[in-house]
Image 1 (cartoon, one colour):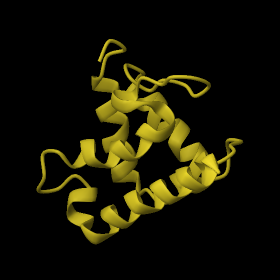
Image 2 (cartoon, helix red, strand yellow):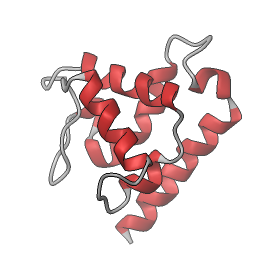
Image 3 (cartoon, helix red, strand yellow):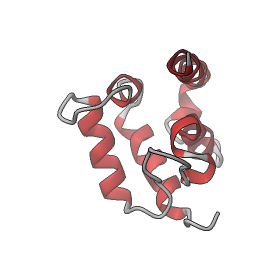
Length: 108
């Protein structure tokens, strides 16, 4: 049941991004990265600070986050759900998400 909610939530986020591709790529909206990264909150916690079994993303290096997301997207990294979620993001979107979380601190 929990995975159904997770997938449904991710689908809603992808739909919102698809409806406004300019914002999704980080163009024209200063908050675009925050909106896209908000899709990660279900598993990785609000502001990237996870509670439970998922890793926190807040404060990690941008390049490391982006590399891992691309590995999930490209099928080079094993995952339960993340490989499916990451397929919905372009390189520009992945970079925006990675930058957003890299700017966060574990205390937020």
